[in-house]
Length: 405
Image 1: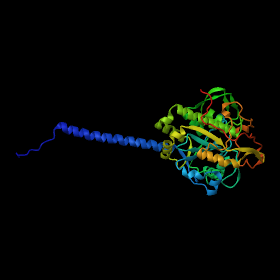
Image 2: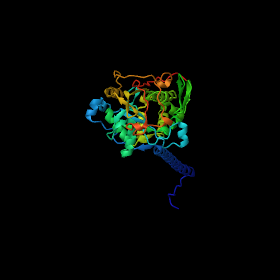
Image 3: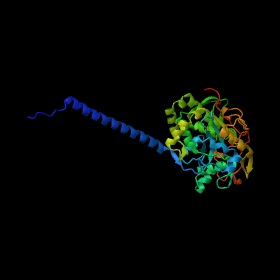
C-alpha cells in the first residue's frame, strides 16, 4: 500500500457543494424566467399600442414662418415638447349598437373633432394647450382652403397620411415645431375614461343634448366613458368654443382626480396609467414604449401641474351655405408665444367654462342624426346651413374644476 492514500471528500461537504450548484442553477433559471416574463410583458404592451408613421415631426419651420408666428426662440428650449392631440370622429371600429348607444351617427370618413397643440415644458408650472377650432378655415396640406378638420381625410385620400397632412397644415399656420402626435377616436376615448375609473364633476345646472345622448342632472355627477364622450361632443349647448371649454374642463377634472389619488407622486403607478392610456390611443411611430416612459419620467412634474387652455380666436362666416370660422390671423403670433413660453402679457380673451352649466352661449342648430360635416362640406352649398355662434375666443381650464364632489 502506498504512503499517500487518496483522501475522499467528506459526504457532508460534497452534499453542500451539490446543493450550492443546484441553488445557483435554480436562481439563474428563476432570474432568467423573470427577465423573459418582463420582456414578454413589455413586448406585449408595446405591440398592443397602435402607431402610425407621421412625416414632419421635429422639423423646425422655415425662418419666415418662425418670425411671423413668434416661434423663433424654440431652439433655445430643447427639452420642451409640443404634442399634437387629435380627437377623431371615426366610427369605423364601432358596431351599429355602439353607434346608437353613443349617439355618433353613421357619417363616413374620418375628421378631427379635437385639434390641440399641447406644450410640455420641464420648468413650467402648467400644461398649456392651444386648440384650433375644428371649423377654422385654413390652407390645408394640399393647397386647398377649407375647414381644418378635413385635413386628416385629405391626407388619407392623397396617400401622405391623415396625421401628416394635419401636422403640415398646423406647422404652416402657426410655425410651431410638432414633436409627437397622439390620436384617439370615439371608442378609444370611451375606453380611456372607463379604464381610469370615470370622472366626477359638479354641474351648476342640468345639461341635456339629445343628439349626443347627454342627460346630466345638476350637482355632483359621475361620468363613465359614454357620458364623458357626450359631454365633450354635445352640439346643442353652445358653439365650438363652448365645446373646447368643456373638453378642457374634462381634462382638468381627470388630472385633478389622478392628483388626489397620488398618481403623480408614485412613478410606477404613473407609468401604469400612461401605458393604460397608450393602449387606447394611436401614437406616432417614434413614440415606442421606452420613449413614452422616458417622457413620463422627464415631465411628471409638468403633468402634475394645472392645465391652462386657450383657443385661436375667430369670427363666424359662411362659405356656400356652410357656416365656418375665419381665424383672426393677427392674434396667432401672440397665442403661439403664450403656448411656447407662457407669456403672461399676451393679449388673450377668455370665455366662461360652459361645462359648469349656466349661460354657455347661443344654442346651435342640431346636426341631423348626430351627423358630422363631410370633408367637402366647406365648399359644397348643397350640404345645407350649419349654425356656429361666434363667442369669445379662448377657454381656460387652469385648475378651476368647479364645485367639490
